[in-house]
Structure formats: structure tokens, C-alpha cells
Length: 102
Image (cartoon, rainbow, N blue to C red; front, side):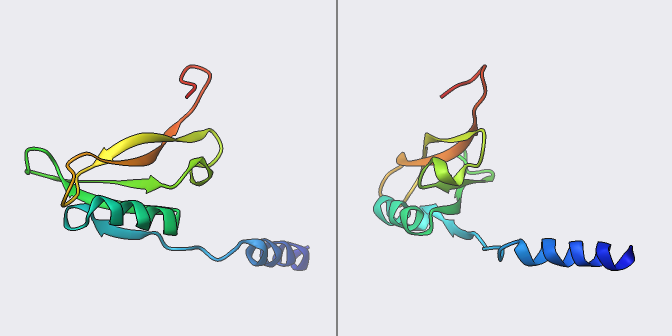
């Protein structure tokens, strides 16, 4: 029985793909076009930026499309501040449900 359990654990581990790290960037040091290119190329990235009042640092994960949001999620329009655009258009994942269909 112990051999079967060990075999199942090893099979499960071997079937899991390698975890890919997500890149992290500061949006305020980049242009809007470069932020959009990074997201398109990497499919998802985390961007940090100062809050409007400058007292805290905000961050979120931004994605290229719905495919990076998993089941029950969608890529909603959002914006982040960049060096050349205070409202650079990007997308981040939001939950979808029967009460909040996108």
C-alpha cells in the first residue's frame, strides 16, 4: 500500500509543469508603450506604483487577456500611472459570476 501511495505522489509531482515566476516592475519609470509591450510579451506582470497621495505603494497583476485569469475570471480594463501617461490603459483580472457577468 505504501508503494502505491508513493507512486501516486511521484506521478502527481511529475505531471505538474514547472512553475513560472511572474516579473515585477515599477510602472512610474516606464513609458505606457513599454508597459503594454511587457504585458503583451510576458502575458502577465506585476506593476508597482505610488498611490495618488504618494503615501503608499500600490501593486497589482496585469494581464494580456482573459486567458491569464483562470476559470471564473476575465480581463477588465484598468489603468496605471507611467512616466508619460497617468492613466495608461492595461487589464487586470476580475471575478465573474452570475451576479457580476462582464
